[in-house]
Length: 61
Image (tube, rainbow, N blue to C red):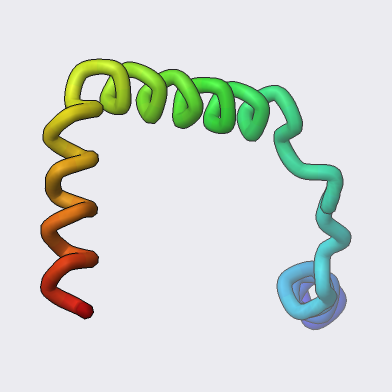
């Protein structure tokens, strides 16, 4: 019984090695989707975004 408890304690307390490579296809998908969203939003609201930027810059000066 004591040996089993020691093995269990060691198994739970030892640091586990992790795979640090990451999820490359997931990051590629997130990057492509973000670029797509920015393109769509910019295409739809180009004039409004330009006027908002101009108004903000005019207030700063």
